[in-house]
Length: 305
Image 1 (cartoon, rainbow, N blue to C red):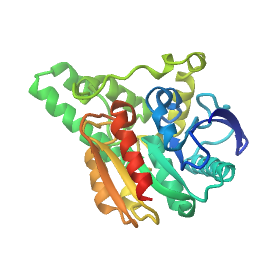
Image 2: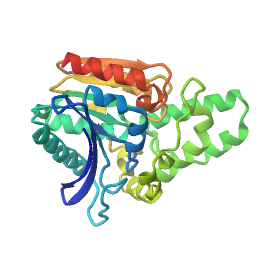
Image 3: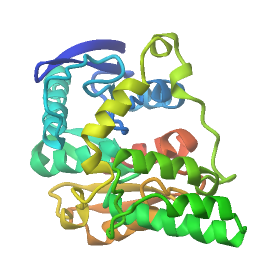
Image 4: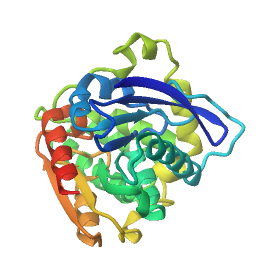
């Protein structure tokens, strides 16, 4: 099975790419990050092998990738959760499965947590990867680490530039997405590790995605949703109760969504079953940095549920 389609989802045609060896395999829905940064090209490149054991579904969220753009609708976390549930219901009906597996990456993990907490009856398990917990605290931890490393190297230029980025007391950016992007550009040399794989640019991998405009949707959507990804609107430390099995994939070198915070969140989680898997050679995306281990862990989870 290797198919793709545009599914009507809450007034917008949204793209699904579905691969699987048999219709009886468990469904695994991948909710990408960003916002508005589709994972389909990277999933094609690194995770084709999942089709042997799952019906693997890569979904381009509204307003990005090969999905339709509708700029007239107000974007909220609740809308993305509603979209994800419509996609879920379609997959349940199409493949005659009462429950599916869902993995949320980065921004997609915020959608994922809210999705499975609202509709636990529809999911076999939740897997959070690059789990977004509290953006303000996460950025504060990253900032403190970069300042420490820059001071050790006597990198006065970076220290001076960092001092000009206005942070709120809780670690969030006063300038929202612009502040986040400025920090990332300055700190990237300190937040990457030689222990992790160098990944290709997803925009250049396949002709059908090369032809798309990636940056306009990402910037527009990022600004509209910046309060969720850079501010104090998100604090999953207060959303730690689940009615289904929960698994966190935590990467040793993840400073985009703090590995330290993810482990704190895991300690708070109350669920019928929970487990944390550490990826020792990954940054923010173990699905592509350590794909073989990522796939093995997913098979392990499916076998246990």
